[in-house]
Length: 242
Image (cartoon, rainbow, N blue to C red; front, side, top):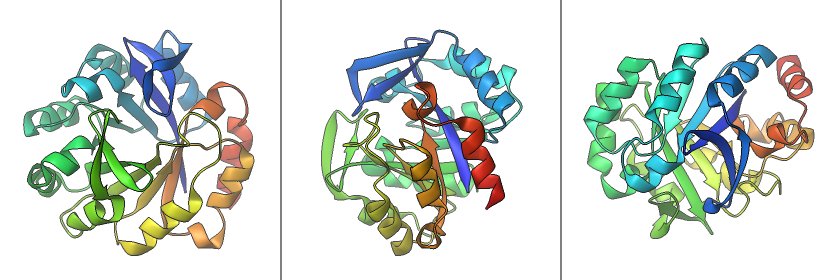
């Protein structure tokens, strides 16, 4: 089980949003590369990055901040936000991103996602951000009529390495992961699933290590790490011990 620390980028800063609202952003570090280095030093094995401005713009916006992070750390990095065409996928992978995350494209252009996953096996993940079970797009500004499980099933057997499932209602609010919905998705598909949205404490990490969550690849933690509710060393020790 992988615990992914999240660095969300807005205007070149490391922030956390509440329920994906760009107007409800808290700045946690003005130097995202230093934050990434701190996470690596603590012992995390994989970073989760999101270009928030890019998610709204439909193209990379915080590229300079991402590139500084890639130059600073040696652990693998997955990146989402504003990746909508093959050229952008290729560019990020060539710069050292280990895995790109395609979100809006999974709804708007599933053929592109399929082509990217087949062209770069193991290097493409799909981000499904759900509000009441329906997938939101364009930086969560719009909600589609599509259920997360129906979209996920489109990408069975095309090389997608993971589905990152975020419960928008919980994201940034420290309400705990939506384990039931996340596990139900994992059991409905063969693609590994990563839980996201609401991880609040060591109790959530313990829940991820229960037998019923065995199909999950891991979980993403953001605000709980930044505000001290989740002790990173304690969490990593628990994961390693299991």
